Amino acid sequence: MEGEMRALETLGNLSGKTVLVRSDLNVPLKDGVITDDGRVRAAAATIEKLTAENARVIVISHLGRPKGEVDNSLSLKPVAQRLGEIIDAPVSFVADTVGAEAAAAVKELKDGAVLMLENLRFNAQETSKDAAERSQFAARLAELADAFVLDGFGVVHRSQASVTELAKALPSAAGLLVADEVAVLKQLTEDLKRPYTVVLGGSKVSDKLGVIDHLIERVDTLIIGGGMLFTFLAAKGHKVGASLLEEDQIETVRGYLQRATELGVELVLPSDIVVAEKFDADAAYEVVAADAIEESSFGASGIGLDIGPESAKLFAEKIRAAKTVFWNGPMGVFEMENFAAGTRAVAKALTEVSGLAVVGGGDSAAAVRALGFADSDFGHISTGGGASLEFLEGKQLPGLEVLA
Ligand code: ADP
Ligand code: MG
Image 1 (cartoon, rainbow, N blue to C red):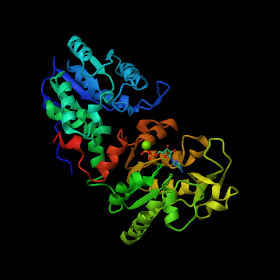
Image 2 (image 1 turned 180 degrees about the horizontal axis):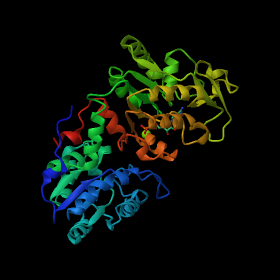
Image 3 (image 1 turned 90 degrees about the horizontal axis):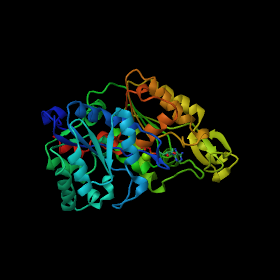
Image 4 (image 1 turned 30 degrees about the vertical axis):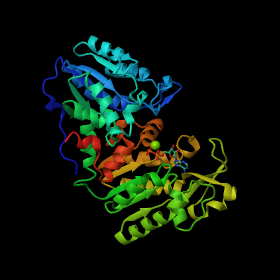
């Protein structure tokens, strides 16, 4: 699907050269503390390889959505410190990107040393809709370095200054993480081992329509949980109480149900649901049949916050029977312990798959770590939510195309 990407080696001998590395260090933060450093850990390999080659490394990334203005709560400074701990080497930080301070810090950079610049999105040009503005920002970044390595898989589906324009402005190549992510995801699109089961959850069905539409032709089994399952139940004519429901997608979803039948694809919906009195960690809850949500004691105001135990068992059985599994989107509101069991059961089943089991999606990756699983329990945890979904949809990703 994607052409071959230029590998890191194609940049030649980088000793003494200054290399800009675009990582995706967009980590979740709570009160300035990193709550999941998975993306920083994933970024380390490329940075360590470059410093081992005696390159001068400048790491760049975005963090959150500061809307083109300085927002100190979204500074990359704590991320620079965390990266230093992970690679066990000093990582200096400058609160600037293309100004005089950054240029001065780059000038000071020694062979084999690492410098991190401030959040790219403090500059509105980074994500500007105007290509000329993006090119301008990329050109100023390019002045700082001799070569560019694109290693932020989470942003390869974005046409942004530090992704596509910067890759055009300097000799450029894919980093180890991008190469690794693409290699794994290719196993889900080419020569895959069957049965192939995809598990989708998360909050909104409208976020995942593209991927459902594309995958329904390719999978053997499609399992639906999470907030989106209620739109599926509604499409089957069931009442869903006050659960998450996207009325405007019911017709589309009905079409998927029909196509699944026509194609002989097994579409698995939950048979039981954990219904809560309200959207609250301490809310009272009951397990009811999926076609009788409003028959709980909370009536029409009950909210489905997780798949029930019978469904969790069924989903786990289906997952374990597969040879290739892709999972995106939590099965319930896993952030609340009472509604985390479905997600935990699915995660556990993925660790027991004998073939390739891939977890994709920012919240899904955070969920498995929060529930106590290790990254190594899975075949692969993708650092890119949107990027992995778009890859599976068969879309051309601008950040990968530019490296072809
Ligand atoms: P990802 O980032 O892995 O792609 P999403 O962003 O699509 O996943 O969805 C994650 C969110 O979905 C979680 O915050 C979770 O609480 C929420 N969610 C899952 N099930 C439900 C539900 N039944 N009702 C409301 N929200 C849900
Ligand atoms: Mg998400």
